[in-house]
Length: 309
Image (cartoon, rainbow, N blue to C red; front, side, top):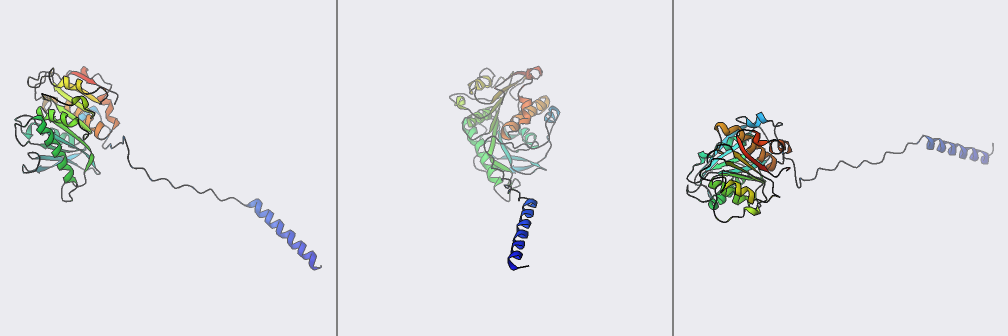
């Protein structure tokens, strides 16, 4: 066979092999984009922690976490010392709550709230004031200073609450003149939530500028901060566009919202739910704040709100 014939046969075989390979060729899969990293939390974020809440769990004497305490010396700057209550058995940062007492009243008058809230996953500081005669404007400054203190302690590697506080999620509570101070602080932009307890305040205020979610707990038979001159008009002054609620305890005197006794379960349910909803943005607690007939409970003489939140 001559050379030209061999070349033609070889060329034909090559074409056949290429054709067969083409028929059996499987294209490579398209490249898959990597799973994107989660974006940082922006806007309304869910910081929920703990088991699903129930009425019985909220009315119980304590939440799911054990609580430890740390004393704060009276020599601290800005307020008269106090106690930090913080949960154990949980990790990650959490919201902080500062609580201030009323006129001529010690820290012990509001300390019940410390372990109650901390056992549900908050760092809480209950404080004494620089002077028992301090007015609401002074108590406003002191409860704010207490929040600064727990944030500073969270940034201290040697503190028992090191790394525990999310400085962007803080709240204030106060009783009587302390409640007036909490309302004053809520008029600014610092707080995620506020709960004034039988609040007392006279004179000019900026409550019509409050955008902080605010739950006012008032006492029906309060002879000191009467509901008709304090708690109820304060609630009405807060804009209707603000997330707010007014809980009035049936037959309660001026101390009815300080905790313990027959009102402990009621206060725990609403106080914890408010802080969980607006510090942690935990929507599981909406069911206890919106929807039910609150006044059907004989312990509640009146309830108002701007639901749905």
